[in-house]
Amino acid sequence: MTGTSEARIGMVLGTEDVTPTVFWFAVSAGASVQLDDLVVVETLKPDGRPVRFYGLVDNVRKRHEGVTFESDVEDVVAGILPASVSYAARVLVTRVDPENFIPPQPGDTVRHARGDDLNMALSADKMGQASFPGGLLADGQPLPLNFRFVNGESGGHINISGISGVATKTSYALFLLHSIFRSGVMDRVAQESGGRMAGSSGGRAIIFNVKGEDLLFLDKPNSKVVRKEAEAGANKGFARDRYALLGLPMTPFRDTQFLAPPRAGATGSAIVPHTDQRSEGVTPSSSPCASSAPTGCFSTSSRTRAAA
Image (cartoon, rainbow, N blue to C red):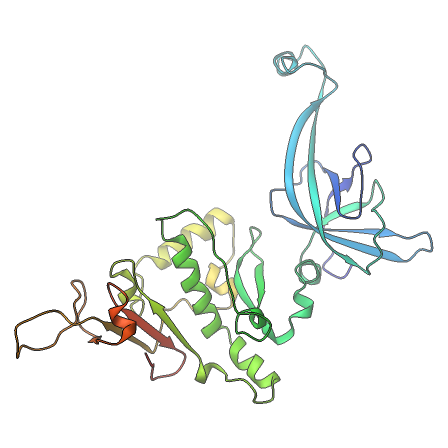
């Protein structure tokens, strides 16, 4: 294995078809497996060389073995019928290394992918200096993203889906900006490019605000974040807060500039921004940026002076 010596969480089933792309494994007693877990399996070719399969758990199920009818569950619980519980998970293979697409062997050991194995499962080993944290996995490991698919070098698009109206997509988009600006990835990629790309000193983000005035306070500390992080850490069993696990500061945006349309007033009156909750630090502007967004826009950068 290329990662840490993780404990076995299961064995590849022989009662279900085992293919190079999909397989089931029986979860070991005392182990816990959930949807979206990343796992690794190592099998041996006939010549003795190892092949590793990295994959994502896309289905988990339990069922009784040794009974026939669905109604037998009452008799099993009452101790009238003998039965055992089968706990199994299905894996969609995301990567095979080396690329010998043979199936794993029934009975092969399954482990959680951690450390180097996690990087292989997510192809983070190919990201190099362009890797930056996109959040935490369920087990507390950082999820690496490739900045080259964000900055336009290999692509320039992020799609965030979710339930409308609960601001989680907005929050995650803002978190990604925070991670990009504060993780150091912009400077690492710029240095690797030999000066062809600008680092954090040349980075800017422009946000068009169409969701009330909440985003006009992104440069202010969140009074609830410490308590929320403590609660999340306790619920997940993390030793540190999630920002620390990601290697990011738990701070608001810095070097920001806010623009808003001017408030309509009498001729000769002072020009003030058309905002209700905040006027300090908000610049009235008739620029397309401010006038196209009902409650204005703002820009943030990683250096002292921001540009709209």
